[in-house]
Length: 223
Image (cartoon, rainbow, N blue to C red; front, side, top):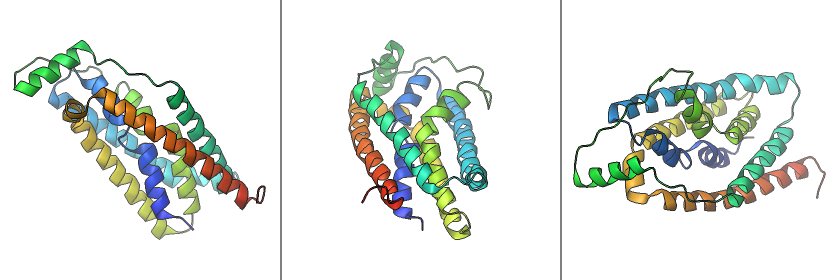
């Protein structure tokens, strides 16, 4: 049985806008609003397609290859733990580009400023597919989380529909976050976002260990 509340939390943590906002801002800090909207829209569509493909189609491979959900849980917990440890051990404040500082200062007083548009915005090229859709929106551990919960929901169309709704809601949240990335960063700043992400990574490390232990208990490896 799928714990939908737990699924919602894990999906939001691994696929939500926490890491996306500062990364998207750094990619688009010199671009105009129209380009930002177009990049956000294209990246959201690509990321949503990948998420739905993983949930609705790739999950079938788990059944075909006889991969248990506990195996997926263990694999996911290891990936999540490694990712969290890397973030915790490599904390550093990223300097805001000089152009980004000027943009924020001018925007704060309502002054106009020029921005260079991004080029080559192909659906499966840079920066749409990479780095925005992957790995800013669709993270490696996010894929594992989708596989885990979608695999548990195999044969239960009602639960699969709810999981699909969760994914669509998270992707819509990511789209809004990208559109609002500039004012959010202007209000919060990169240091605060970096500290917030660092703290969340510590929580993710504990969550990864809990998922790992729970899987071992279900397999009767540990009491």
